[in-house]
Length: 479
Ligand code: UDX
Ligand code: UDX
Image (cartoon, helix red, strand yellow):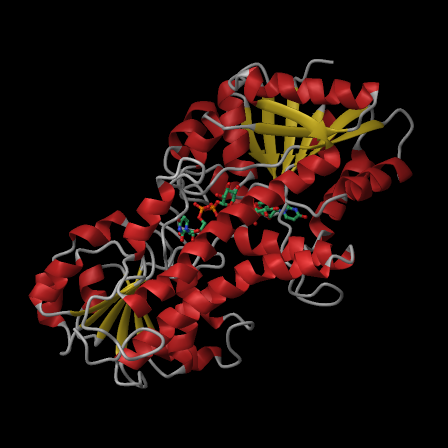
């Protein structure tokens, strides 16, 4: 059965861009992205899309209304499609068994139940959401237990590897497309159908097929490996600060080993994003459930090192500002978890902001793409504070980096936005309280130039000062 209609449940960071690219590359297929949120669908149908992603606007503009549709009519889209992607979110559980670690599959289960209740005829159901290994089994059980007469299901795992900020390119030129399915004639036929969709633009050699469980684990594994590299280089950044080595030089030397390679070796204030922490916690939980405590402890350490790095950065700010930030004004430049996205999920900036707010600092926050309502939401969320009104009084959100830094004691740079490279730091210095501090959590600024202007500068993995005595980041009176 050639695929003519595709439905995608979940119009988020994954479902929206991946289906938009699919519609662009498969003009012979109608792609409908559905979501329970009316507001989100209205945004997808408007001029201002709900997510910022370079290149996405042009893709949506080309296909929307032609063979790409965004709708809240979930039932009709499911009924009409031969192939259904499940792209709903799978947040870490905040209560009960596996709290703080296991993925909460309630939305995936809800999507499966919805499919079972309305679908008739053959359907290929594809897990795109990140799920624990063997989740497909649960989806299949729900579907087959609620089978309507004539309905027949195949479940495939087809994890998404796009990174935010480069999603369109990642989708257009994917290194690999994984498709996992059952080793039965029907399972193989379903794999073949989905593969055919991708073959519209991905070379066959990059489409890898495997069993469902391998595919599910192969989603978690690369994220765990990538995060592990960042935690490894971040652990060495502490050694660099204590010894006088420069972590960028070390990373360059390490990356030149062709067996290791140079990517994901950029030391930073810590990694963020919706996937790394969540997927590793999920892996840790799975290992614990499988009675593999040593494996669980091994991966947990990647998360612990990330926490340590974010804490180390915040402590550095506090120590440098004479061990107290109470009542002091601090500018946070950047709030997104990395540049070229407006996404703040698990952003290290949230961690830094919370630590400084807990110490009574007043924050002036500027990010070129994050809405002020999102920043407020992140910092006043019940998981963050039980005194949201107090926090609100301590935060000011700016739409300009110069007003954000005017009159502050220190700047903490948390996101590596390109525009921060070209700010007029002479002008900023003039407007700041003295001594004026810059804490470069991304190691992107021209530190020599800043020191020449008069700033006291601290960064990650490099001493910009005389030998230090302090175990963590050096004593406050250096540089
Ligand atoms: C994705 C993956 O699906 C997730 O498993 C992965 O770990 C992170 O990336 P993402 O697209 O980033 O999630 O999530 P989000 O942007 O929150 O989008 C999910 C969408 O699904 C939301 O728009 C939400 O409204 C929608 N949804 C959720 C439904 O339509 N129905 C539901 O029952 C639940
Ligand atoms: C990641 C994976 O890269 C992607 O394949 C998967 O589908 C989803 O999770 P994403 O979270 O969008 O993508 O961003 P990524 O570019 O991987 O960055 C994650 C975090 O690591 C960011 O906070 C980034 O700033 C940080 N990072 C990245 C570093 O600190 N150093 C590096 O060298 C690279």
